[in-house]
Image 1 (tube, rainbow, N blue to C red):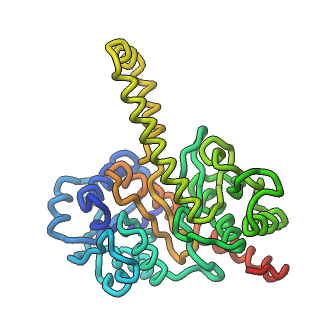
Image 2: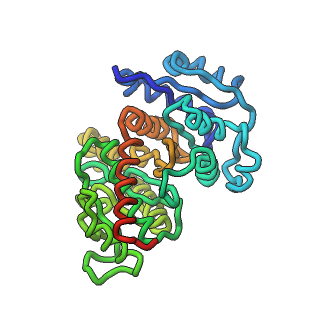
Image 3: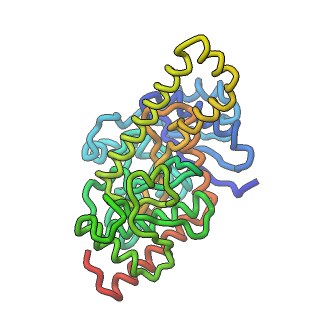
Length: 350
């Protein structure tokens, strides 16, 4: 049994909250929770949650509910969330991490509001200009980490370098690999390609003595079909790539279902290969990659997709458990300090 810790949960955030939140916690405990001594501090409407917890005995046994009737709407502007969000389920979820009552916060609520509230309460680590949103991404032989996924539309070379350091530390904590490879997303792998920002970040990472396994430029197809562990890009490009991949996965699944049901013969062959098709469907399931982390904060905050179901939310919880049981925050601070010391020594211009 692992060391005991508390996870703070925003029960009211998301398109289908609070139902999928409680269902997701119950699913996690049934499938993986026996190996981890995690307790839940759940924030939301106590009356609604009591009904749901009565049907989720494993979650109920590990949970404490902190009542609030206030919620952050999914379409609320971040500035409004900062002014009006105090005391809401999202605010209290993050506040528990700030107060060190909990180790990790998880919410499926409004992304912009969660970023604003988290940054206000937890602050960024020393030297970090902006937090980055990092997500796991399915590959042919496992998973990679991509950042930024939309928190920072425009980035300079210094920020991309910080993203590389933070993404590398995150990958090590999540997948327990000593020296994950790090690549910088570009329009080609040739040295002459890319804009001035990309080239400056590439030069910085190539000449760094941080010990990062930087492999240079990677292209868009390497995200899903390459051998790189961490892909670094700006939030504009990363978010478009994410939405494109999600749409492509849905299209492939739709085409596959139609093909398998097109005729009596295809239905028969599908029946004969049901195990193989089930495995393929699981690999194409975007819920396996649900759960993005705001990197660079003085605390761990995980953003679940707002439209996910119980299985997807459970995956986000699983990421939180992995980080809580690791030395992620201290290791991240160590590598960031080394980066900023190196910047000071060479006079790196932001």
